[in-house]
Image (cartoon, rainbow, N blue to C red; front, top):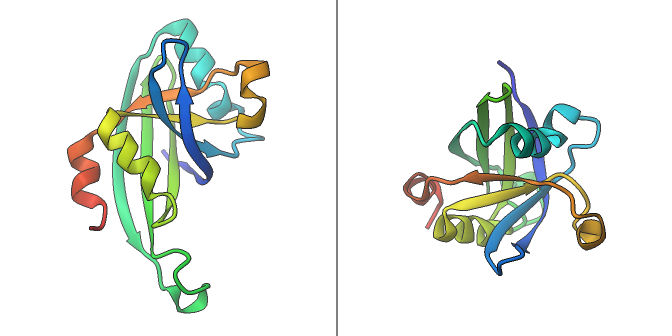
Length: 142
């Protein structure tokens, strides 16, 4: 199964109705209903089976603005029920390291597929996934 790759375009923290903190990565999945509809499917059908894996890619920064991106962390998300889907969320490091550290601390990550600025008014469903803290801890650069 091939997986679509989505770059993280923003990060932050979602606060739920009970005051819980959810590290959040925003991706632009417009035009990919198989991804944007996952949270609704999981809300209706149940959480199902979600597995994650991660890989760290070194980036040759010689052609980039110095200090802009040193690594990409590719977080692969595979869902086998209630639907089958796979995609990759790509984090630019060091700029987006803070949300990954928070995800390791909290043990979960929200993947937002709509504009966070409209979240309070629209109350969209976003996909929450469990994160394996030791896996990220081993992969993230010091």
